[in-house]
Image 1 (cartoon, helix red, strand yellow):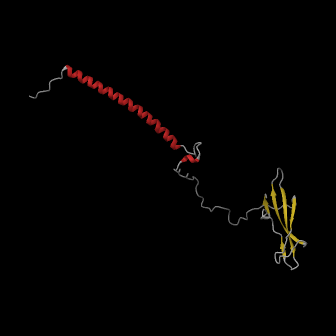
Image 2: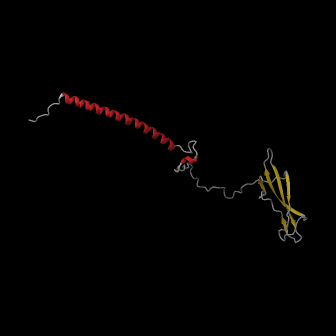
Image 3: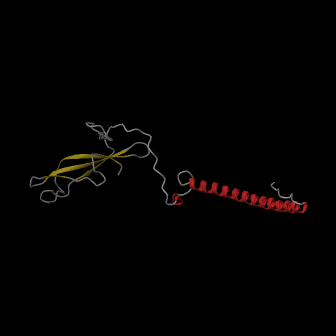
Length: 175
């Protein structure tokens, strides 16, 4: 017959109960400490995630606070049409038309012959090309016409006056 161990005495059971009570108390303290630490870490994780997700694009932070990480460029939702960008072939384009009666007319005469270099101060004008600048004052545009006169030199060469630098074409907005 096998013999079973004798049942523990009252003193052994009392000592075991005290030992188990101390163990439960220590475990309860450990659980409380770990719960508090877990709450602190959850709060810190939430703060770090908030900081990581906010940058100059979605908050009032300056771009210098973004750090070195780059956000991926947003993907365009538009579909390609297959057509080339720009104006259509054969389209003449557009420009402003000159006005018949400009508000101000400034005459520009050639100073010297473009062929031989002679002085053209007293030469008679044989025509001009007009270039107009449309300036927008408060109510109506003030149009200044720059007339680029041509003159014929004694050598037979016809020379046109050069336009001021701020008037590169027949019609121009502003000066």
